[in-house]
Length: 334
Image: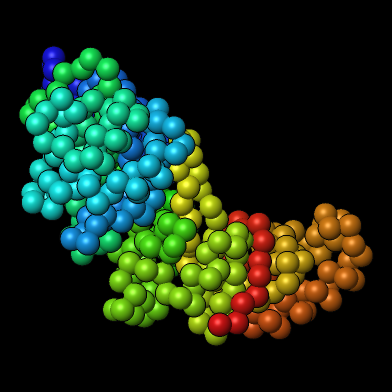
């Protein structure tokens, strides 16, 4: 590789820029495409996984320049994956596979021949004590050179930086929320991919030691229901949405924050409260909502009673800055 240090420096700079402007789900796809040009590979498989003695667990994944059936084909040969076997022997190494080499299994040969994968290299950013670690498997096809030690080092360093940037992108989402909220990205089975440490710092009381990286059962049943949910009995608000990377990688975004009195207002009462808190008069609010001023005055009394306030200044303090950002609300008693 020519100008290796310059190439890596430019890649990391672009990666950091993207972490400020892209969702965490986008970072991995963009990074893989960039690396394919820098390192010269034709296709890739990437995502978050866990390497265990009883076999690998794929928590979320996508592909670059591979057919949609690749993951299913891999699951059929997973016990014979030589890259996984190398990881188990050397967790900090970058395992490689050469179809033209001497070490094979029937499964690896079948996978390589089916998809034209002549040279493989896999790097993983291992996280101690966590279920999901980011990985990229890069594949070369046709007549290509094997992976050099220098290229493997480049791939490993890149994956480490990508993992850090994905966490930064996830934190950017959290920074846009009020300081009491915390956001995590989870897979369809409720395993936390990113953001768990921050969430546990704020809401550790809802996570038992038995749950590990798994969303608690009482919360997992709602993660695939988009919108805002009031968990009355736990004094929490959960906001759920499905996020897609530009490569199709899909994850669930789950945001938790403490329940406030404002959350218990009806949607119309919240709208009225926001307008009044912004400085609008009863008459202006009535005009905006196309109702009679007397209706607004009656609703104002109901709002004051529910919020426990008795004047406009106190109302302003009781309307949170995140109010109105969620598209829907469901009342949940759990």
